Length: 99
Image 1 (tube, rainbow, N blue to C red):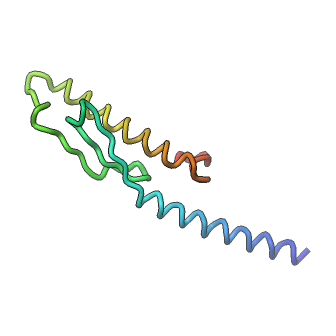
Image 2 (cartoon, helix red, strand yellow):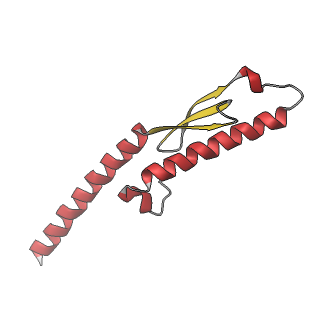
Image 3 (cartoon, one colour):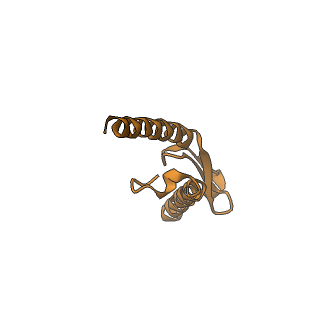
């Protein structure tokens, strides 16, 4: 009984180390989502944290703020989709907590 428990503890520790390593890899992953043929771009890491937003002056129209807002949302969704695609190959991509 002792050896089985010891083996399980060792496996759990190994899984915990792998999980920590994958979390670090997720943080280092950076994708760029875009919309409007690059008028709005968003850089996002693997944790889905927005790192940078770029808005080209060409798409800033004070009479069409809603259009700019739509471009920002579309760029965010594009970046989010890229994170999902790049992490779906990882064992983390199949876990239920949304990596």
